[in-house]
Length: 210
Image (cartoon, rainbow, N blue to C red; front, side, top):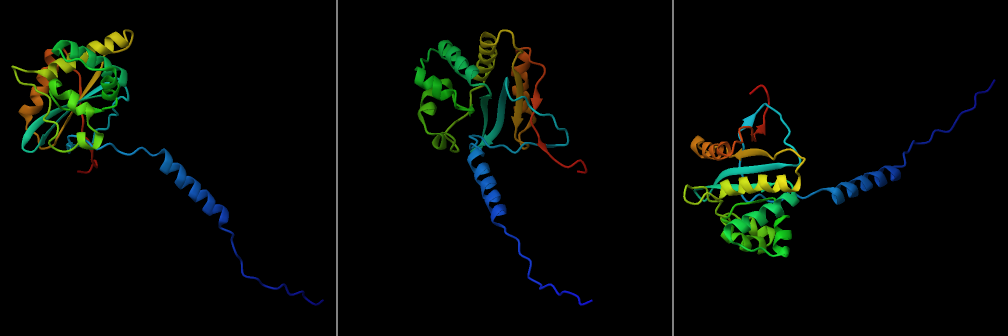
């Protein structure tokens, strides 16, 4: 019986659908991605193999670093409502009146490092100008003008007033790996003076074989 010969044709794959999916995914990631906000006080945290995730809410971060040869401390809060209430309480304590617009703008600032007397100027700046090196001199924490202590106290007070049934704020110290221990200890002493004996030290991840 004679065999029927089938004509051979080159195989081809239509990639149109695959390209459409790829571009849709690319568009999705671009539109949903959040740009990283420049840090007003960049620090290189010490490496550690311990991995503990910090809470997404109810957290205060104290960033300790050096800029232009000077040691500086910056204060950051996760919750916007607590930021606004803390600003109100600090304004009352130091006699600085903030407008509703300034309070709303302050609620958008993740971290700052200026004396409260200069906070209005920082709030009025654009984010890019505010986060330039040298613009913010850090929060005072010496014995004659310890504003950091007051920010910590009023933040806890604001959190209690806004969330009376919730837990107390968590605190984390984010220090540069090159910082000297006495500078970090000074922050620890301020926390412990307010009976805050449990806090996190922020570190960067490293391999366990190091």
